Length: 278
Ligand SMILES: [Zn+2]
Image 1 (cartoon, protein in one colour):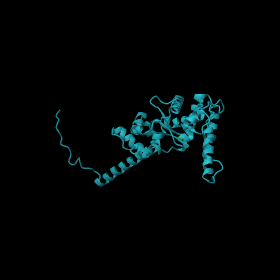
Image 2 (tube, helix red, strand yellow):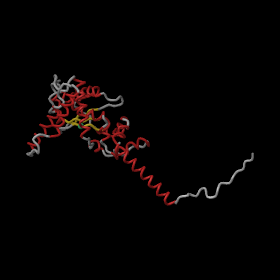
Image 3 (cartoon, protein in one colour):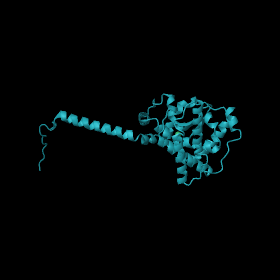
Image 4 (cartoon, helix red, strand yellow):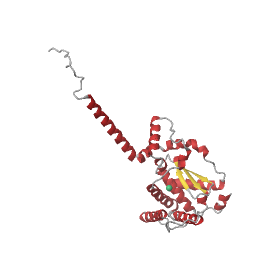
């Protein structure tokens, strides 16, 4: 048998279709793929954010850590640290996750959780607390945000994508250039509900009941009323619908999970309120 190297036919590299139409087919295809990727990223930013390891999230804010003033109020600090360690245990964090609670010596009636497991509580809020259980509810709520990765999700779509890219590409992210970002996170209503529920679970695990949970929102209600009176504002609503809704949700969750809303309250340390003014 004989073999021969047959010459290829003329014009095999010439497209049978028009170049211009090929170009448009490819262009349209590329655009469709890009639009699909954007849609997927837009709808899964929560998923994407939660893929970023907690350790990496911590490294993002490590440059801000020296700016966090250490609290010289040692009695108060010791108590808050001990309680927050217990709340962390009852929060059942994943192994690589830790939270750090910081006291802020300002009269604001507030507490918040932010990137890297940092939780801040203000003097103005602590001043009004009636039991340790209420403080545990507040810390439990904030640790719920940390456990659910809400701070990094709350950074928003663009920043989450930049952080994820910087992690994959191994360059240092400049996305957190503004320290203000640390306090400007916005959490959705459903994130708040999930964290309220987490607070109830924490109280139940730590104290065997959730007395003191919904009462935190009653404090918020009466605080808002006071501010309105002080600033001579006419309240738009007799009660504050959001606080009221949260109280109802907490009560119905506890009922559903068979968690008692009554039980012996643990008092705050005898000198707690005095420590605040030291
Ligand atoms: Zn919250």
